[in-house]
Length: 207
Image (tube, rainbow, N blue to C red):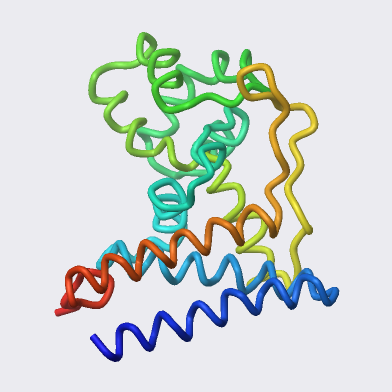
């Protein structure tokens, strides 16, 4: 327990230091570290799942505290499905492509997407789609556009803007450092709570 507490005390200091980086003009570095910390916490909390992008999306949905990040962007969902190589993805996309295009610019939650596309699909296809809807979330977009670009392309945009997209008739907020840093703080607290309440690292024995 001493080592667990010490670890999270040190992590809290690292997380708070990101605000200093941001305020001192190091926006790229603060975003890079912020998204990598979220990634690392996600992979630790959802161990042994090694899918970095999926863990990133799940940890933001479960602990991030920003509902908007779990909403699905129809255009992004369509583009993500088009990049998958599976025959199932191609078959489903051929059936739902037109319907998704009709709602470009409108964020939908998972229930709305299932209700909208379900009648077009078989039971097997709908089950598959439900498991893949995370690919169209704003969290997945943040992983690709910010975390991925920061790590692999030496930089990322300071924020992701959705000028032509609405959510329940309202403008969609920018995904930026301020939003993601708040998420990171909440995720870290959740990870600490799970670790201390179970007396195991992130609730796992890692065996």
